[in-house]
Image (cartoon, rainbow, N blue to C red; front, side):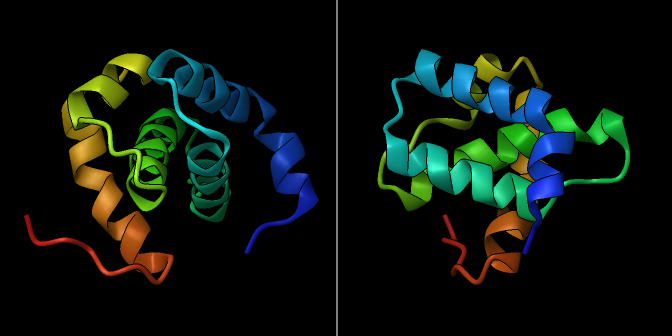
Length: 102
């Protein structure tokens, strides 16, 4: 779980998630999931936050049934696709979702 302080401390990254969601045409449910997942998994190191934000956005789009490709999400968040690929499964698993095996 996260606190209101986490939201304030990460406004920049939440804005990035919103902007990328706009570029991808994602709905409010996917955005909400992405925000919750990111805030529940915010890394200590600033350099990792962009990758976790991108992976959270990808996972949020899957949960909401608005699945995007890893490449599209990576492009929208300006990260390498590998960053999304490496982080989305642990984020889903930690949030209590079953990870697809494809």
